[in-house]
Length: 367
Image 1: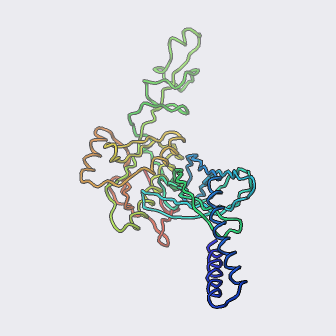
Image 2: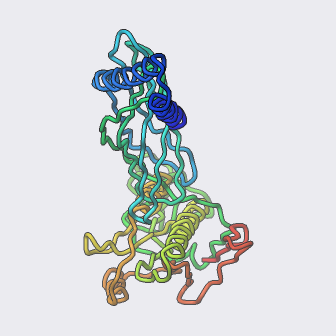
Image 3: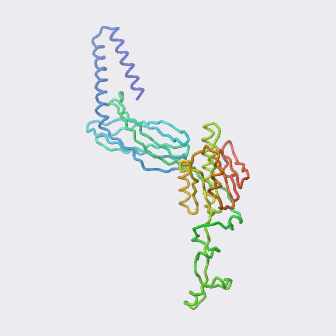
């Protein structure tokens, strides 16, 4: 459209030059036609832009980083005579990492029709991305003169960190670690006598102490009790939000990598049926946020929450951590800082790199 406008301006200025240089009535008539076209085109755009109704649907999408986000715009052309060429001007921003970009698309809307436009965009950083339709530009019939109409409609998209399955080993120490819990497994029995997992028929290898005497007397057959298995958190993933230094681009990259490491460790622990907790300090709530992962839905809930993790500028984070987990014990504590550093039980862990990026196949843990 800019090309057509420039061509029209050049033609108009050329005609104006010829009008002063040559004393020809045809040149004056041509100049009059061009001027009349400009006035009529402006009036056309002024009228037609009020016959366009635009709605941005906020469907609260949640997608993984680098996946396509379909921005849905419903456009109604109320004109019964003319189709309309419209330019849609968008702005997308993620204030968490300072990511901003502008983009535009053009569509032709038939007369008297409603059309739904899908504008695919992708995000490089996780967090909450806001997509704003700033304005639209309605053009005349020859698509030379255009006029903007303010819209200012928004939609929000939650960009989730990518999760990778890691070569992770859950040791016998962690499997047999006794942790306090209010949940019990519905798949296997354990040794918590305060909860009964199931009652079954007696076998020779069963202990006499496990016999359910009341039921056995009633049924005239021996039955035993299998006890419950606690689903206590044996592993803690602590996100150290207090370590975020360096240049803005480096901080953004480290922040992104840290969240992907956390989501990948959590997913890998879940796949190994290892109940664990992910925690970090929320400066807005002034408290430690804890997310226990014992079910599949917990993993996706965590990935949504990770986009809200923010750096904390303070020196008392160690004290906050100690207060939050006083009297609570874990077999393994994995600390992931926002600058990319990792420690396992206070021992530094060297993140494997390949061509400047994390080598996810070599990022192995033993808990």
